Image (tube, rainbow, N blue to C red; front, top):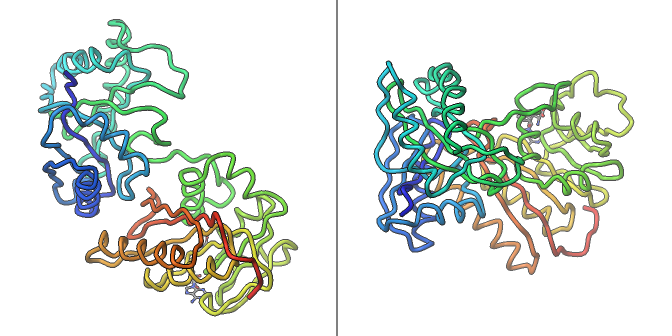
Length: 368
Ligand code: SAM
């Protein structure tokens, strides 16, 4: 019998309500009833299916497509470990032994904590426990050498200095980082939040093959709301030819770059002379206006890929996102345009989510 009976979801603190609504809605669509808890500003949601034994398969299904608001998901066993400060390792090993019987041997051990104020303070404890717990697991044969591409991880979630959850996650079900917090090598040259956000979006939303073929010399992009130019600069570095649309100035180092054209115009009124491969849009506007704009570009055949931000309102953020998703897909479906739309709340997103639209079967392409 699988000891994992619940799902633990890491999310951005302050987005527990949205994560919970999305989790409940997806589970319900799959015919799984359950109850969830999501303490305010905790950075996590715990979902308990009413039927035992479904957590592991639910975990796989929730990765495909991934939940928008979940940074990382794991299946956890019942109850929690209490960790006496004198010996925190023994109770964790006891719980991991039960998990290993069903899911082991594991290919990795991750120890994390929610991204709340309290959780972040637990990082040194997590690091201190990691080496000792890993050694204990290896000694007992519960950890094997990893190839990094597949297998099951053992996970520990520190909820406080004396309380933890234990569970498993699956390598390769989705690209994920411990706790869903990315470690990005690029962009060292322009480490603004905007640039990190774009890098995270590209790593998370595109396959490596797509990235190599869609962001390279010969590709063209329009960057709406481009100033000061963090995104444009990254695209240029990949060899993409960029039209940056913004009334504001671009950073001085972007002046005179031959593969960049700066158009000082309203992004909602701008029309491309010729269709481009990419539309990027980072304008701060009402989400419904942004999806209307994206729909118009796709309907007009002006782009094949669109990467854009939706700044969510303070209230009913999940509901607003669902309305935007339905509007965009509805309009394209009605026009006979095949498309694939994904949203994720990135680690570098604050009160926003990032969307990627792939136009698969488009209208005839013509300039605006
Ligand atoms: N992605 C940019 C980067 O990497 O540097 C940062 C973009 S910043 C968050 C938003 C930009 O959108 C601002 O420069 C603002 O001038 C621009 N903006 C907002 N509304 C706009 C509009 N209607 N037309 C053109 N630009 C707009």
